[in-house]
Each structure stands twice: as C-alpha cells, then as structure tokens.
Length: 124
Picture (cartoon, rainbow, N blue to C red):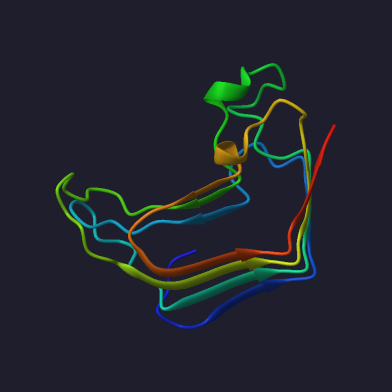
C-alpha cells in the first residue's frame, strides 16, 4: 500500500492471509516503483489467523512476518529521518496464535506519526 493519496482500509475481514495484512513499503534505492505515503488508516477490520508465513501453518512463530509492516526498502542504516507520513491502526479485532509476541504484530519504521490504539488482540 504505497500512494501519496489518502488510503482508508475499513470494515474488512482478513482471514488466513499467509503474509502481512498491511504492508507499507517504498523502494528508496532500486526500482523506485513505489513511493512514500501521506496518510494510511486501517480501522474497524477483523484479522483472523493471518501472518503464518510462506505457505505453511507450521512455520515457527519467530520466522512469521509481522501482521502490520511499515518499512521502506533500501534505506541506509544510518538514516534517521522519516519517509512515510501518518499511519493509523485502530479499532481492529486481531486474532492470532497464543505465542506470537506483540513485536510480531506491529513493525513500523521511518514514519512521521504512527497511531496504534484500541485494537483488541485475542491470542488462541
């Protein structure tokens, strides 16, 4: 999800998506096919059994992708600025495996403002 226009992802069911539920990247170095975002809102969605890995339910939890991933590609390790604008992840119901750490749910970098609030995380 990379566009300079406002993005609203709302009132959806994400059921058993093997990879990330939300991926906001940006190619800062190579292909330049995607760009920065100004505003992304992900709210009132239901996320059930997602992010289990490369096609296998038995992928170890530490190798599973984060459900919400905001990170540009090709950024220099010493870069300390921002690339993306505002990302809001709020009022969602997230059902995930019991051993997934919170760090395995959200991974956000190089973003001016990130709001993660009022999400219900159910671990089964």
